[in-house]
Amino acid sequence: MQQKLDVWKVAHELVLRVYKATEHFPKAEQFGLINQVRRSAASIPANIVEGQARHYKKEYIQFLYISRASAEETHYHLFLSRDLGYLDDEDYKTLEDSCIRIKMMLNKLIKSIDNR
Image 1 (cartoon, helix red, strand yellow):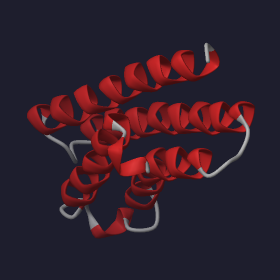
Image 2: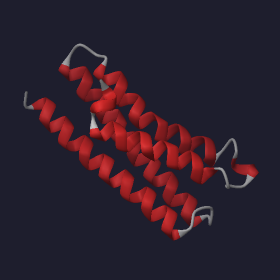
Image 3: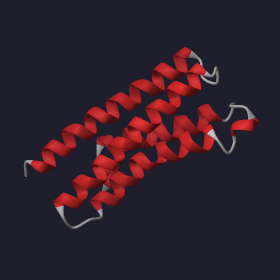
């Protein structure tokens, strides 16, 4: 079950924090940056879940790669949000640390599954 994977837990927590952080973004960004960063963040744990539902190792790994790419996209959107002044440095650093941790965890998980 996906909820037992530490990377899924960290990714889910990131999604919750991204939603909270973007509540205070300008209304003009509702269909722009807010939507983009929320969707890319939610894609991380969603692809972990979808990959686990697959019957073949190769498919599972492919979804983990997609999840990792979504973490990279989220990282950029957060960087942009900070540079636009929507996130302060402290909030950005916390969210950035989560993105980096998730990418590292996904790399380890991919390697672990690939070596089975």
